[in-house]
Amino acid sequence: MRKLPPLNAVRTFEAAARHVSFTKAAEELHVTHGAVSRQVALLEDWFGVKLFRRAPSQLSLTDAGQHYYVEVTAILDRLALASMDIKEDVAPTVLRINAPPTFTMRWLIGRMATFQRKRPDIELRLTTALGPVNANEAGFDVAIRGEQGAINGWSSTHFMTELIAPVCHVDLLQRGELGRVSDLQRHTLITYLTEPYDWRQWFASAGGEMQAEQVVLRFEQMYFALQATQERLGVGLFPLFLIIDELRAGKLCLPFGALGLRKRSYSALFRQENRDWPAIKDFCGWLGDAGHETEQATRAWADTMGWKY
Image (cartoon, rainbow, N blue to C red; front, side, top):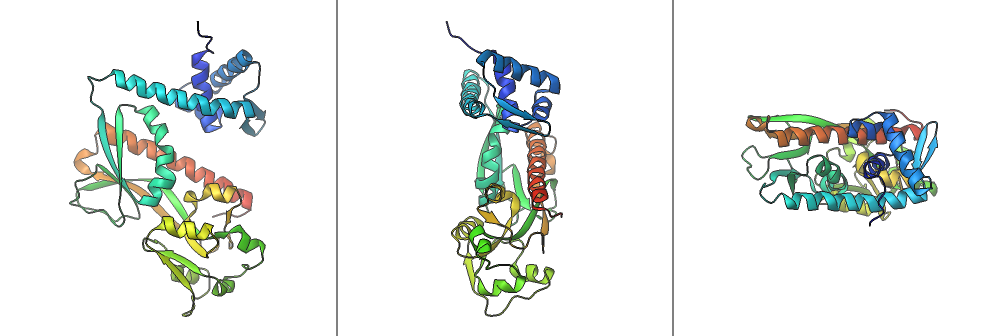
């Protein structure tokens, strides 16, 4: 006979560990904060070890909790997939999503599992594209774009505001090579074709001027430009939500803080005749929640740096 822990407690623990929050886990599971706390305590009693470190204003996983979270997440994902395989007589709903390549790689894919847990009956199919949405495009159901203008016959829903600022490897700052806007003249500026906010605009907003002899390194896509920045080849303009992990880890930094910070809206677009399709409504609702969490994470990081926006 298998000796299994209380499975409802395991499910509750996984949600709490994923959010690192009993409150958010309670919202996801539609229970009270106290119910989440009790289920986690039940699991800890079963193991005889603590899975969370609890402080008045902070919750974190212990080493045992982190190890168990990784294993449990994989197991629950496999269980969800196995359960869907049993329902062979029910064809999954296919939802085709089109988004920019770097956004897809560094933000969307890493969060897809949370949507799949909510709607395991929906199969997401991702494609990528650069540039504005073509109104005659028929290859997707939902398009994700930043600052996309209105399209006749299409609806859009905002789900996140991105912040764009100059970014460099922390080594450049620690060596004292960047302190003033004028110092950028001695550095390579990194750009990419899909750049929504170019260096001339940034210099104008920061009270400076881009020099004609400025050295510029150009790339086709943001992903390559970001890699070049991480390799200390220069300074680039990037959305903070795509590099928040590197900022938190102290690998990349904002040499000028909030100076010249630019805001840009991200939206999901879909044909108006499909606006009541449950798959699209649920996906856009999930996007809104995920976008809000990302904004909160970016804001929390900014607060630790002592600047507001």
